[in-house]
Image 1 (cartoon, rainbow, N blue to C red):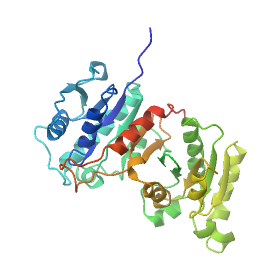
Image 2: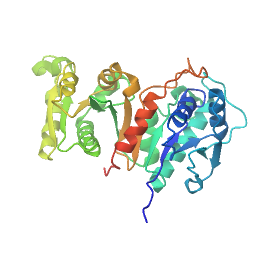
Image 3: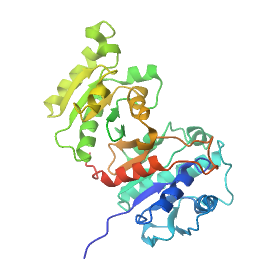
Image 4: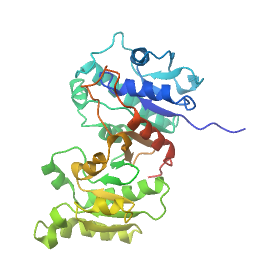
Length: 330
């Protein structure tokens, strides 16, 4: 007897944003692929379908074992029980708490082995803070509740992939945090992430921190004192790492096929090249977790929430990426 694969859990995101709408649109568009569930609030998802004029029943469940996967109704594992809809397009502590509860519940399911991975719809950091949760983003919540000290963000599209040494912090803090240990963690996770995508013998390019990768120390010595020693240490471990390469050309080289993945030193250095190529094909992957986690490469879009105009393409791309990734063994 063949055991069916574990389902993917899609978290609702901030209910005041476009998360519920793009989830509903993905369900409506994928007639032959409905064996997944949402972790969130049943009332919010009912309203999302109603707003689209879609006659889709919401099947509220309390456990994955109760999911119907009948191809008609959307299974929603209830992580909250709202009695009224929160305001649309506004920062709300109610929405922040509902979004947080969905994430934590989904992490628990993944750690228990009830789902094979998580796809997370966008959250709003101000709403999280208003609800009393001082996290700068999904990545830090996943690390905390997933029980991991070192995780990394990988942004990817059809042409380039990048892993960040530092994530959500000021540029001044990023420079301080990009130490030898952070370099090694990012290089190792980049290599493991590429392997999880089925890339044999990944070629890992490491970007420099300073212009022209420091120009031999003329524009800063971090490349000489920190980044290059980490690359050499990674190569001693058998990782095909190279660099440091100038940050303004390394992504072009990766796009041409010279490298499989790029380690970027800070948030904007890595994300601008990916997002410039279009958020509809961008996906965020959290590396270092014992389960797969992906998300679309955009935010809650409060400015268009409730208008019915949100594009689900990036969510669908993130969902497909979650199915493609091998369950990691970090």
